[in-house]
Image 1 (cartoon, helix red, strand yellow):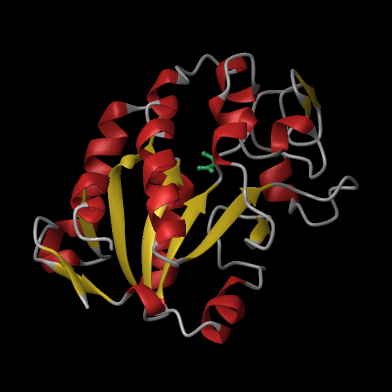
Image 2 (image 1 turned 45 degrees about the horizontal axis):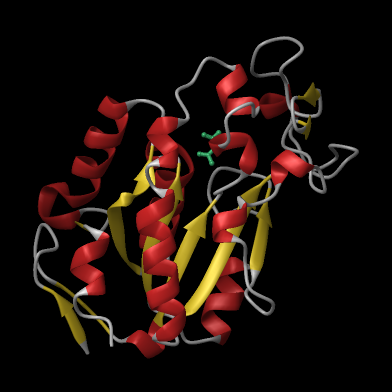
Length: 221
Ligand code: C5J
């Protein structure tokens, strides 16, 4: 067992054999200059600062033999898996399925929907395509983790208060112990990022634990 002593609110203990690194939605359209996220006026620098520490953590996790799971938010080309309540949200002409700077917005198979080159999945690493914000909703993620006897999740990706938070809440309710890596998750809104992390660790770790990736790197074999 390994212990991340600096985790808040209390040290986080995990067994690498039953732990997965979860990399949430590190997609071009959210992170890259010229992508959909930036076209909405967002500062993608707030998200891009996660790429370097996450690259290091991903390499260390792979070297330590952890299960690595990537997710992507997006929909089938005919949008049949996108509920109207989601489809009708957003600025007109910048909705899911509309043409965007890197292909149709949040549509599977489009260039912008895929993961940034720096964090490209290795062959054999599962990539979970999810239609919702949470990675458990309408996906095979729970079954995949159960099959591999995973109980603990090192959670990374974007955005802190949306898909990361939703996924951590879903995971917590399903009995997974989640450690969120503060420098490997990001939001376009620094205040939401800070408060989002505080909400996870508050009340004795109501949704999980928070630490920096360097705290995990220090204990990984
Ligand atoms: C958003 C996400 N923010 N991956 N998606 O729409 O957090």
